[in-house]
Length: 425
Image 1 (cartoon, rainbow, N blue to C red):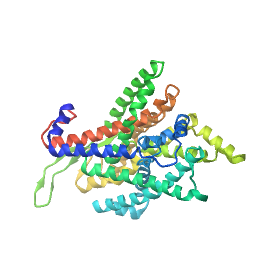
Image 2: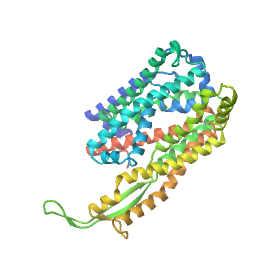
Image 3: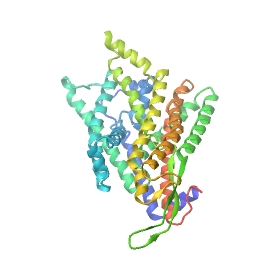
């Protein structure tokens, strides 16, 4: 792997891509340390120590929420917008038709995704501000009295920060290596590793860092195995006439159906839903009467230390793994494309029987991926009594390993195009 990286640096175009990616990440880390005005950082640090919900949100901001910077929301609103558009595309016929228009259609859907990101970012910025104001962390925030202009300034700044990070991510995708938005999240998680390791090293119990390392190695190994696991369905193309009077010889290939086709999307979507009740309830927990009692009940049973939270989180991850996998599969129209180009699965009739067969195989193998993601989601909570550094470990590791594998494959493809030996032998 080291030799391949050195070989990449010897090529001017790949070297420029790697350097460009690194420069964009440096800019991102500078932006993540530009705070909004009026923040009590001592109170903010106490909140992070006592509220793990805020820690979960901080995962997608790349640690920018710990300083409540203009990039405090990270690219999370854009991810939410992307998920919403992907879920709406097969439901709304007009969007489905646009998505089938090739590159132009995908560009229009991407444009709608960017438009949707702006109001989502503004709403999340205001909600986050209200939460911090209720905890005494942010002063002069609200829509009444003399707080209106400072509130608008903070909301607009945080919304602009999110859009700026999305833009940096897209620049990385276009001019660098890897998926830019994923690399932004990856950089934020990696930037927090030194502080997490420091928390482990200062503990008096040596078993804690050893357990952390052991669990981390096991999770990384499991993630690599599951992410790369696939079921190969053989496909045979019969001899047929093609354009120009040429005859295409019969060939045999395969369809790779991945065990985890959904990636980390189910974790993100389930997390956003599970965080919603507790976040809303935190606005009213100091209220008296019935409202305050209901808010305290929701916080107690929908907090990250509640077994009910763990169970619901696990079930939601499993559900969204199946849901998102089937949505992506239906958009690919594999059975129709096979029939169109003369391909068939041995022993299976073309057309609808092929689609039903592939659906059945995909449903069976997705069980493994769904259960694995569910376990990855709840493992940190099961061991959170050992160390607070473990609370975000498996979700963060899933993102980190996924981004590293994807980036390695892209760099490997660039090297193989130039007759260099790749990472995977």
